[in-house]
Amino acid sequence: MKNKAPAFARVSVGSMIAVAALSAHAQFVPPAGYSDGGSRPNVAVPSDPGAPLLTRIPDTAVSSLIHANPTYRRGAAVGRVKVVGAFAIAETSKAHVVDAWSPGFLPVTISLSDGRCYSLQADYEGGTLSNGRLRKVGCEGRRKFDEPTLPAPPPGRALRLVGTAWGYGAWVDDRTKTTIVTAPGATTFQPLFTAQMTSSAIMAMNGPDWPGGNVTLVGKIKGRLTVVTLETGY
Image (tube, rainbow, N blue to C red; front, side, top):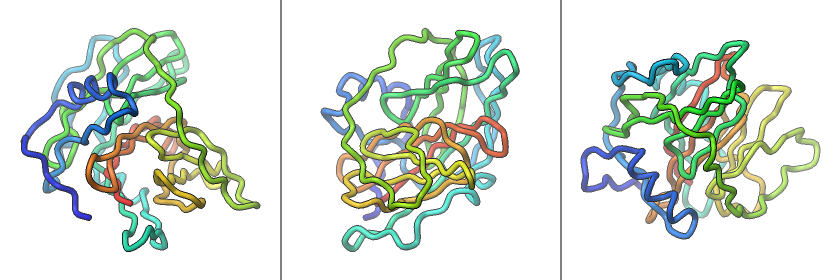
């Protein structure tokens, strides 16, 4: 099913997630800004002083690392995935990312090893993320949501479950340094897409009237801490 563009042209993801956080899983809140594509590779809004260096990675530079499963089927539907934004966060030996969470797919709270926390925020417009910035926030506020039990991978697959969000599951193959993401509502283990990255966290939000939504993965791509947001369909 083709995603419907919302009536509004520009929405702050931070404002939208604030509403979603209140309703948690009791109510679906639509991802914002589905449109006709685009690319804005620069960080246009300054981050807070002292924040880690944030770099916007062009969507095309990450797209080759994300692959929809060509054999995925759910009725007549096929799986799809598209990169809508990617950011690299500079780490040091004294300040590296130890955790990440969000009630939706953005903003993402990043917890550093030195005790600081930052919120990665961005605007979702024209099918891509722009104006990425890091805002210092408190480290409290993480909430645990009840997630459905996911189908186990087949015997012989050395996969490690790193997290679930809105029914999606993220499984890491440490040998190949890849992440497998499964779709909500699956009754058997069936990858929706794979990412050539070692993920440490997953965040997501589903659309209200179509089988799809947004997924954000946090992890390492070639040793670089990267936050990737994707548009999915299943």
